[in-house]
Image (cartoon, rainbow, N blue to C red; front, side, top):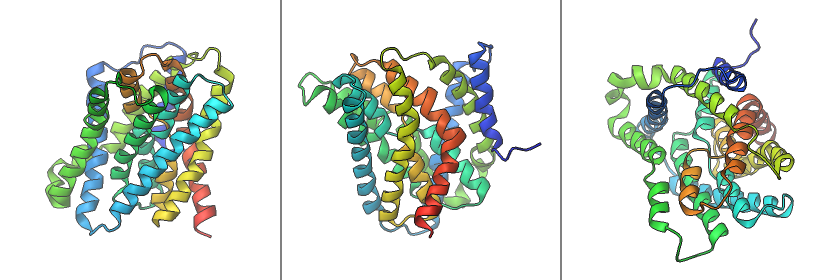
Length: 314
């Protein structure tokens, strides 16, 4: 009996259940690194391949609006966390940086969701994914520390701009654009044909990691649960508004709404650990990975599709 849910989602549920039961399913670190590398390169190369197929116009406008959206989401999250959650300035800024940034894993699931539904999207979306990583992290650091001379900006910028995820995505985009569909044909079986299998293994590990972070809340637990579950749908509406301003297709709008609703658990934690070590990482990681990520994977993406269809196609 099929429940109409993409099979890859069940791999996440399996990992989440196994982690909660403390079953021994954890992937060896080298395998996880390999799987995540393939996933990031696949996303980048797919976008680059599509860019090579067509003359893309308006990219500069899309990038500018995407940067604006990332900044807006960060300030909105910071205001909610400080005003309603009463978090310290440092913790509010750190969590806001995570929620202004994006989840590459969530984007990958949304791409697979659209492919299964036969809904096309713009070739520029992987580029906008990379663009959204940057402003939230930088703004979060400034909100936490101010323009302090003691902030290790060189290390932070290196982590943000030359970090593993950004480099793999940009590298994949470049390879896909330069090689084009014909040039990528020899590697397509690994990077494109096996994409959903790679994503399934990645989500299995993400479920295990998410289970590890449950219980990471202390004082602000109840508020943070509400924040992690209620803020994504609200932020998705911001994403839909920016998608309308960019003139994106239905698929592009769904992806941008999903990105706006997601929270970083790769780039932001690494950068914030360097620049704001006094922030409580349990708040950010538990909210982003143990709550927001499962919510988006299990419920959010179909919800954002319905919102796009209701708001932009009528």
